[in-house]
Amino acid sequence: MAVAQLKQTNLPFYEERVDLACAFRWTARLNMHEAVANHFSLAVSDDGSKFLMNPNQVHFSRIKASDLLLIDANDPETMSEPNAPDPTAWGLHGAVHRNCAHARCVMHVHSIHATVLASLADSTLPPIDQNTAIFFRRHVVDGQYGGLAFEEEGERCSGLLSDPKVKVMIMGNHGVLVIGDSVADTFNRLYYFERACETYIKALWTGRPLRTLSDEIAEKAALEQEDYPGQAERHLAELKAILDEQEPTYRS
Image (cartoon, rainbow, N blue to C red; front, side, top):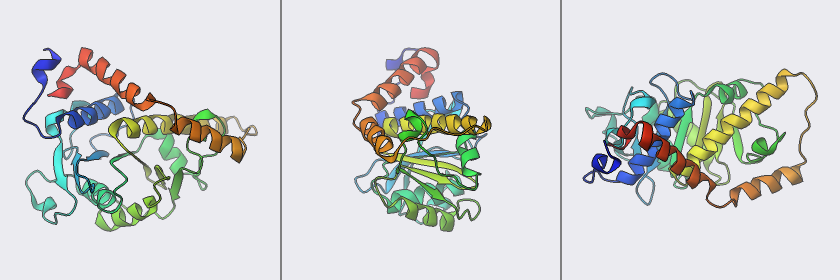
């Protein structure tokens, strides 16, 4: 079926839904998902309180644009609705969108290498190569895991993202949460964070001393990446082009 035939013109925030559906499906292809758990969300109101999010217990590889829930973070009746989201998704993403307007897109996964990092006594990510340097002084470690991310835990976690410079929260004993300005920006950051964690974990496996970059060079590399023109947008555009050829129903 042609892509044009799949477009749901009556769906609110259609293009945003397509971007998010693409991110779900590609995360599954990268094996960074976990069964029918984990959640992505995207703010669609100016204050960030209204957001799109995946439906409860649906595999990332099957999510379509029309499946995404439109949720109000300030609506206390959300969990009593018939199509209520996963309660931990509501607790974590609702709190972040309610309290951190700069977090336009929020992606939470238990990807293997990020979760290994989150399980270490020291879960900070040192700048040992170009990818790890991207996150220099741009991540925070939550060392106070308090159980599943229901509302109280979600509120606590959201407080760690008050600094707009911090784009990644390493959730100790849990996983990782990444925020950004758009789906493209956030997915690109999630992708590179997992790659950076993989490099670091495998470097530790060697048992040999690490060649750590200086603070000055690490900050320089991070700033250069932030100013790199259009890379995140092109990354997502290429993924959508591949899905348009191979499984275009993500757009429906």
